[in-house]
View (tube, rainbow over the protein chains, first blue to last red):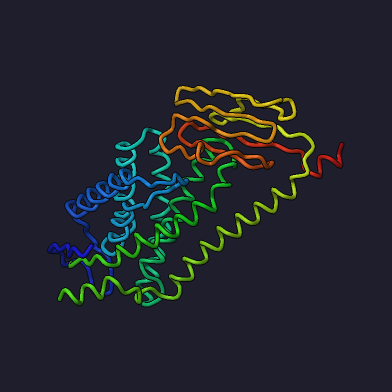
Length: 182
Length: 140
C-alpha cells in the first residue's frame, strides 16, 4: 500500500499535468499490475453472493494512472486490461461486460479527476473512485439489458449502487495512499 | 518516518466535502430507488391472475399461470451455456439449482410480487412475475 513506485520521467509537471509521450514500459507496467489485481479480485471469495460483489481492485491501477496519462492512454490501459482480464476469468460474454464497464468508468473518471486537479480541494480520488465504480456497474447493466433484451436487471441496481459506493471508496482511498515519484 | 506513515494511513482528512457528498448521494439514490420500486410493486400487488415468464437469451422460453399450479412444479431449463432448475409454487418462483459460478439467483430466494425478477447473468436467464395491474382490471 505504501509502495513508492518511481521511474525517471521528466514529462510530468508539478500541477498534475499528464505525460505527453507515455512510455510503452509504463503502460505495460500499469496493464500488468491491473491484471494481477483483477486476478486477485476474482480469487477473493465473498461469503454472501451479492450481485456485483467484487472490490474492483483493478481500478486502483487505473486511478493511479489518472495522475500520469491522458485520456487516450488511460483508455488503452483499461480496454486492454478489461479484455485480457475477462479472457482470463470468464468467456466471450465476460469481455463485453468488462469492456463496457471499463470504458464508461474511464470516461467518467478522467474529466472528474481533471476537474479535481485543476480546482484543488474539490474532489479527490475517493470521490473519483466511487463515481468510477458506479459508472462501471451502470456500463455492465446497459450491456446486460442489451444482451437479455429485458430491463428486469434494473431491479438489482440499488444493491449494485451500494456495493459500488463502498468498493469505490475503498479502491479510491487505497490509490490515494500510493505515491508515485515521477 | 514510520510514525508519519502510520499517521498518513489512518487519516481520512484528505477527503473533501464533495467526496463525502458523492458517496452518500450514491447510497441515498440506491435506497430511494429500492423504496420507490417497492412502492410500485405494492401498488401492483392487487393482481388478478399472475404468470411466471421465463426468458432465455432474450427470447420467451416458457410461461406458466400460477393459478394452475396445485402444489409445486419443477422446471429444468437447459441451454448450451448451462442449466437452471426453477421451482414454481402458487405464490411465486425460485431457482433451486444453477450451473453458474456466483449462485446469485439461488441465494435470492423466492420472488412473489408482480414485476419482481430473478436474473442469472451467466446463463442469460430472466424470470419475471407478471400480474394484472389495476389499470388492466379496470379495462376488463
